[in-house]
Length: 122
Image 1: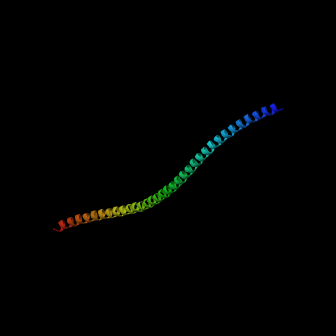
Image 2 (image 1 turned 135 degrees about the horizontal axis):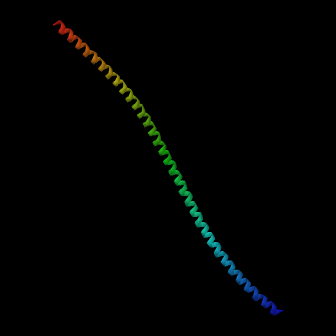
Image 3 (image 1 turned 180 degrees about the vertical axis):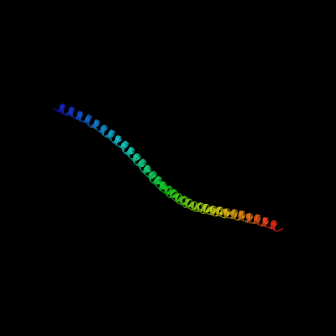
């Protein structure tokens, strides 16, 4: 009975020793997992921060581009108005030139007929 008790004590000591080794191993593994989890959390926070910064930059760029588009549209409308005015002015000048040519031709015809009349009178 004593021998059996002593043998069981030795077995229990062996089990306890192995159990302690297992516990240490699990604690080391858990420590590694906790360290990896912390690293991943930091990476996630960094990625989220970069994402927020990128979103702000994109919003600023979008606002800038929208302002440029509005300015270009305004310039386009102004240029269209100037072009229409220039075209209108050009047509008016062409009409005036045409009237002046007609008046000059009429004046030349009148001068020619008056010259003929003057020659007849002379």
